[in-house]
Image 1 (cartoon, one colour):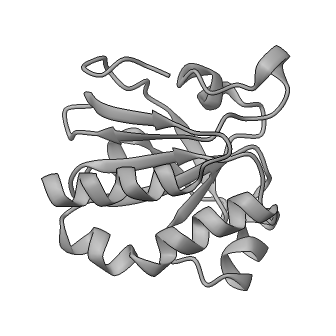
Image 2: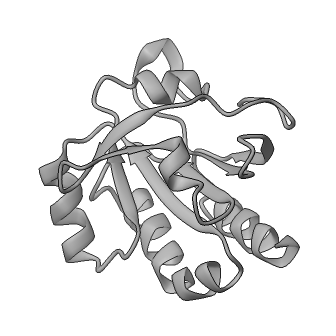
Image 3: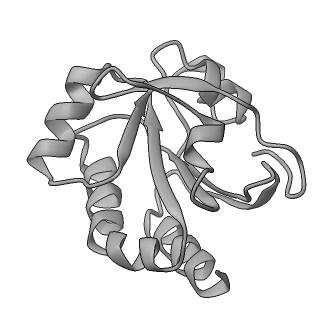
Length: 149
């Protein structure tokens, strides 16, 4: 994980609709909860995405934005978002360049670590959590970020 207080790496990635979004775009309306997950439709990733979906309106009310990043293509993200009614952006990091920049590449370059960052509008990483299996740690992290906002 990147250290608190460090600068978040800039990036440009496509969303499920093929639109390119940058870190600057995502920070226009306030601080960002940026979460990385291994794969669409897996049990853990589905549980995490649905838990975020269930508090999404509360997240927005605090002035935060939430975005997920994984290595799947846009069509997979579109099906995943539609099936589970996910209201937030899912970005495609097919070559895992952004995943690597955020220090969340899996062991030996296999897979993606489950990590979540809170990034301020000045691109400073405020905090982060790494929990590959304990998905509830990510939800608690988001709830704490909401409380602090």
